[in-house]
Every structure is written in structure tokens, then in C-alpha cells.
Image (tube, rainbow, N blue to C red; front, side, top):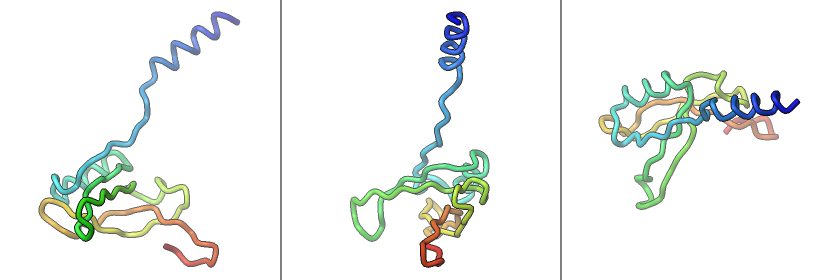
Length: 101
């Protein structure tokens, strides 16, 4: 039993942590943002609001619907170095009324 616990502990320490990368899209081209999302499956994009100075914005952007636990996907835009309306996918939540947000 003790050997089993030691092996399990060593295995836990050896496995890498699974974290989603965080990028600032305003320092990347639209193509680079879309490539990063496609390569990782899902990423966090963090940037400052253009409407409210100093307000930090962030969200999880995904490559496809299989990255969404809600199984709902919608198009969104983020500002990039070369395109203020770069198209990306974001998971959507289902509201109780049946409408999607």
C-alpha cells in the first residue's frame, strides 16, 4: 500500500499542470490570435477596454464547439494590432428563457 501511495505521489508531481495560455491580442495580428486559438484549442485573451479607459477585459476564446461545456458557440470580435474587429469564437451560455446570449 505504501509503495502505491509513493508511486501515485511521484506521478502527480511529474504530470504538467494544464493551463490555458493568456495572450494580449492588441500586441498580436488577427492571424496570430486565430492561430494561437487553433493551436491550443482555447486561450484567454486579456486586453484593456477601448470604451472605458483602464477597464481590463478578458474571456476564454475557443477553436470549436467541443471546447464549450454549454455546446453553444457564438462569434465575437477582439481588437488586434492590425484589425479592431478580429473574428473569434466564444462559448455562449443558454438562458432559461431559451434565448442565447
